[in-house]
Length: 282
Image (cartoon, rainbow, N blue to C red; front, side):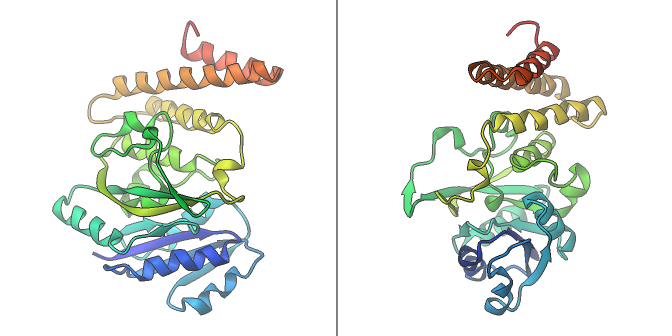
């Protein structure tokens, strides 16, 4: 099984070296490693001298989704593993994916459990980020439980459901995994072989307030796909549509509460309108 690894990065030269070291320490080595430099102004371009076998591409800063999408377009192989430049893998990570997919030829997507490191110390992962295998769409509705760095995807999934949404500054992974899991089962590797590092200032997840503002965009997109006949999760499309609407009501209710608290009149009007569209009471 030949694997392409895609690593987007922006001004993370030092931690990028850590990420790449973990890739080249894999017991099952990938066939190619693609680094997309999303407009870095630090020494990131020097990475090609540290790891001369990688494919390095520079683009003007356009965001992580654009960088990942460019990486996907450059992949020579059917299987793609993603790794964010501030994360790392344990050495058996890719080997476990290979074993899982060789045992189940119909499985097109899998992900792993994780270790979380914050400010240099391992921390306990909140229960809401528990991982599941199989039909996991329901578990993915509230928030994103799949880290891009843990994901292993067959390239034809992107041909079917599309790429990362470049219009979303954050929650682009939440959006993508919803489109995947509404139609496809997920393979789960129980071992925590993805290491997610946090606590640094440039984390996208800490850059924006009110992450549900971006999640509702993804959920509204799913309903639009359903209207076009694209949301058909194994014969339960109506059930799944109700799940999406219920989740939208929950999120718009919370957003409306926050807008009222901070007296954001324009947001209040927008969220009330959206709530009325999905529910008769809130």
